[in-house]
Image 1: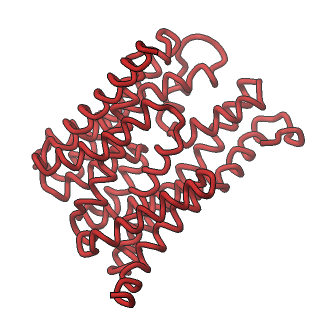
Image 2 (image 1 turned 90 degrees about the vertical axis):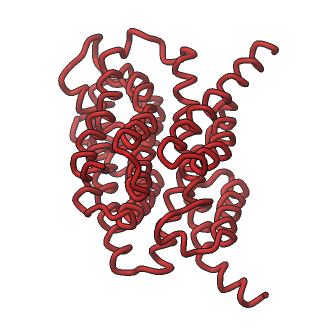
Length: 241
Length: 110
């Protein structure tokens, strides 16, 4: 990341953020959301609902949980509970983002917008950007540029994946539907934290297992159990060390 | 079950409530406390577990593919990802190609 030739204005940093989204992060996000679009089409929801999920929830795990459980026809309470817990990551992610961008203590109306368009991809990018940019106003400009471009790429990807799955059923549609699972697994595997990697391994075993026991509550209970076990193991290991 | 639009509305409110709470408590609690470590663990377990469920036990159109082809896609994806120094796009592209090509490869060999 190089900001030496960027003008020190809000607009210039906004555009810089948008440009950086057109690289690997934005391409990955576009691909993942194309996959989500295909999964959404397959689950039977309308294109408008699919776009509403991307724009309104803006969190892949919850969006995928929604269409998966909707297709299975589980109860409304089980669906909402699973989606809500699948998106719990947004809570610590928002808490971690705020100190990087806000100019002073306290809540401003813009923070509620920032919290909504924030995502794992954007947060990782912002942390990296903050190593090069110290002024909070310019950081915020970059954040808005980057996230606006991400949201556009996400919506475009959702629409494209949905349409492709409708118009090109068969192998192309099935390949699209595999993109999001593969992408999310790799994204988690990039973490260097042992507790996260343990959660991934246990989750990959216990969630499908839970699903075979109960289609309604398997995802939720399997995931909470796997995460709690991984957390517990890591705590014990740290105490021993 | 309620219709999709109603469920979507509730899901949006529930998801946003996490972000909203985050805005309110930011700065008042440390973001490296054990509670957040646990939240992160649960979030990753449920997200990746769900993705593995789609690969192992898909519903709908993906269920028309063979399990062995999906696993071949996953294996190539993860393999290329690590060989290329944790390159996400390389792994993803290779995995999807392998998934599409593996059925043809199987019919050639067996």
